[in-house]
Length: 324
Image 1 (spheres, helix red, strand yellow):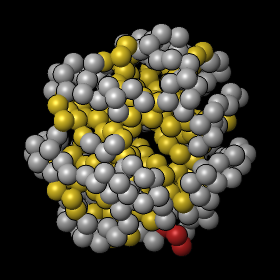
Image 2 (tube, helix red, strand yellow):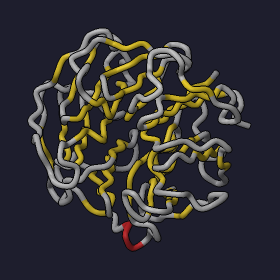
Image 3 (tube, one colour):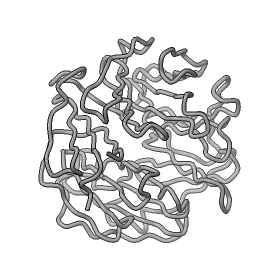
């Protein structure tokens, strides 16, 4: 039963929506974010159950009531699209944000004040024109290590909490980065990066990368979002489909860190690629997934079975869930 959680979603052009009963009923966010807002990123605070940050086409927003209302935060990102938001799990007052045009920002006081970080990114790129930060993660093994992925401009890494940044390649031969996930302490302390047709892994802080060869295993090889089971870093989820604006999607799961994969059983064929996941430490087995074009799926058992939620939306770019 998913009724005791709140799900928050952000759409492209029809605002933000929340469900306080796990997806059975929905209401549009009526305060803070407009009905036509374009929302690209959401992230739930790791220690404050009802705090959610949202990134939109006019900067950054914060909710302290589980997403029922949002307040715009005055930041240097006010005239930018905010695509990604990531908390430092060790010190949640430290928050990172990534934007379009591609840039990185950091707050050290819970989001009240922000500074742009000194990272070099291109102004134009193939395919999407203006590059955007589509992946952002604070490494759980060492919170001084920050990962940022840019569509389409490769991976950046900081080893000092964001003070300085390096573009890294070392076998990562596709700059079209869709997501990044850093596994907690375990065998190899691996960081994973998804690109349109491959997932790359590094066990040496990004100095070298190896492709996992997922094109040989995934029936729908277009890769988008990544997620790790909160209490089991060997369990990896990948959102896949038949293309960026394709006609169907699937969820792949590995229980051995990416060595072998299983396509998970969804109740029906998605209408487009699966795009992103929402997880929370409050219940590691509860995962919410969305398709590109507005469908939502939930699992209570880390992917063994899924339920399709009855409500469908326009394009979904962002989602999060919090305990009630």
